[in-house]
Length: 132
Image (tube, rainbow, N blue to C red):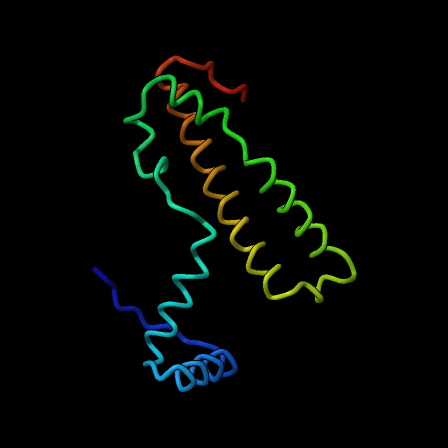
């Protein structure tokens, strides 16, 4: 199954994709679709987050409420954030920028899942409400 979307690309990005399509004898739409697919792979498979928090067992809700980012990912995330805020921020490599975006996505999704699990834990009486 696939979904058709329309996007506006910077001219330079389009020219690079067009060049790659010519080199490989492929359709530009296929090149762009594959590039997007490959760039999103660092996010991994979302197996745990596919199940709504409300359907989790009490133990799984508590585990999700206490979850933290993988230490290796967190270390790399901090390193990239720090590099972005230094004077050399403009010198992040394309790979580092892609890694930072992927880790930002992992962080944001994890934080959202943790908040949902905490809310569910309070609703179930597994945790006291947070102080106002």
